Length: 223
Image (cartoon, rainbow, N blue to C red; front, side):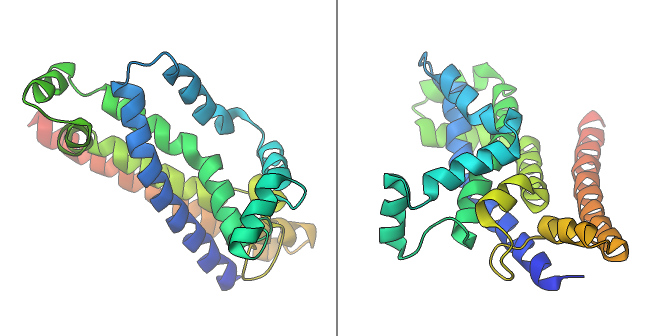
């Protein structure tokens, strides 16, 4: 087992999930509570990474963040190094790639909140921040939990974006998915079995935790 890659994968998933929550909660609230005609276009743009092939997304990000574009040169001047083929680059790519897996559950959860409660809070003087923190998040906590787990697991298992944007640099961009690819390519099926089993086990345990929590709360509510 490549423990360095495991630690890097968990670190990448943790940082990405934290950033996604900070971005996706207000964005999902805007999509649900907002009235602008441009919101449909914003939601479609945020959902695009879900249907775009990961290698295509990774290629576009590699070109955008590379030294041949103004964006890439500006970031390199600011950070002192190019964003591509670095851990920070992986974080940026992972945030974009996993964005739909955080936004969609939150939008579904926020939209399921009784509109009368939101209207009543508005009449009592609650602003947008108060609506989100006091009404939407408490009543949509299952969706929040699902968003956290899905974005974390999706980041741990991503391959195409990592390969295109980060390459295979030990200790910097080599994640478990890259390790698995290398093991299969080198006919190390015993090692590949261990790596794949770990990824499978993490996914099963996390999903079981979500469904057991949902079932338990549903039973309590029904009682």
